[in-house]
Image 1: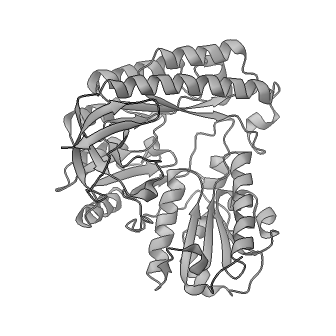
Image 2: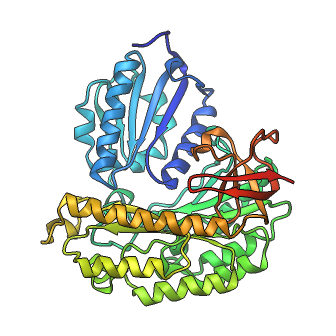
Length: 440
């Protein structure tokens, strides 16, 4: 039950899913702040609660519904607005839930602060949904409102044209769109001027930045200009698909210390047969060669990937090929996802569904490989000095208090340095779950 009367000029945002969603939430914060609203430090004081949803898996949908029910139960006087990818995919289901004021699709999310101001606070289950369109621009609103997190996200690309057979994202994010290079550069300069020491560039399909537009800067062109910005502390890239990872990016990183030595490149499967069924336009050998090139240019780089386990028809041989590739690669961590059927995708009607028991076993096998590889990677740096950034507690990295450029989360006992400081740390001890360090 609510313990106090909420204030209508205070808001709270609950964000699910990827970094693009986190960037969208940052844009909402900025828009609401400009309308004289403030983010509540305690949700019970918020007269407005926004739930920014994800719909990549069935579990994502379930988590959003559970959260909405809990919010309505605990804060019955708050106005709840649901937006994001689940709101885009199935607005009617969300609108029918008790306590929902508005359900706002992804197109209209970009003007959510204006919608909140114009719509009646007494509305119940109203859907605001503009169809996704090819001609939409990728807007780049200011990202300085990070919700307490240390590192702002600059979303320079949205949407996807890849249409992988398992993925619902193109249907809920729309076609690929890229921000103007000058707008991105201006935003990075603004964030640097605001004192942010590490900036993360993100997008739904980041490597496809500018590919659809004639005379538009490509990602490598943009990065070459970003690294020249005066006073820039560190730049980090979020996930880049292997088919659009230009090796020039690794060369740029090797020659510019402002680059974080960390790349996340989704594999999805180490079986060429499964990759074809997934409509992923590369082979396992090409992926392996890309990682080895990055390792040769940046021997200490952190290299992560995503793997989708239990795709329809995945045999034990297919899975073994995935395990072998990961074991034999310079990958330092793996995010493992069980396949989740999404109606509206090609894979939804494919035969050969994998049982939950087999799926769970395969997930656990890959997680164990990931733990071993990550532990081995971290142990390489015992006694060494690494560049890092101090973090706020809102970073959601467990007990980690600093993050190295090559993506090692380290705990510094009795840390007295505030968040958002670039520091050098000495790695003292590495244990299976924790890396310990001291600041020099």
